[in-house]
Image 1 (cartoon, rainbow, N blue to C red):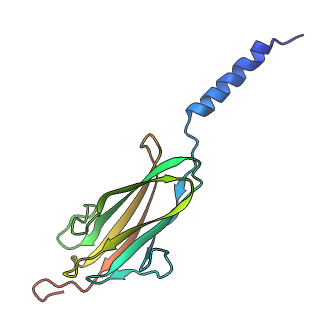
Image 2 (image 1 turned 135 degrees about the horizontal axis):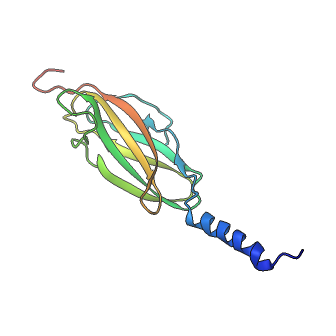
Length: 153
């Protein structure tokens, strides 16, 4: 029995079309490391007024272009709602960058010399595909200490 070439090609064409229509990107972000340097060599967990810190991560298995977005959120800060953007810091919300291929990424945060409210903060990094669909999320926390308002810690 002879099988028509069309009968063989039709299922193959459907499979190839399905594969091309799906987003098979395996791009992901590695864990975030809080550091005193942008290379992530000098890790830290506490920040004092006036210090600059870095949230360091990397994008891996990226076959094309993706977008990463950074946010800094209150996690456990007196008088602040957990999950709200820490607006005391420049660039705490809306900082994003387009990434092509695998590479290291970092966010620098300069704390005002007057400080930020004491407590625990969370850095959130999200990875989005070209259609802006969320594909991965990583977070890291750090503590702010040494800020005093009216002489109180």
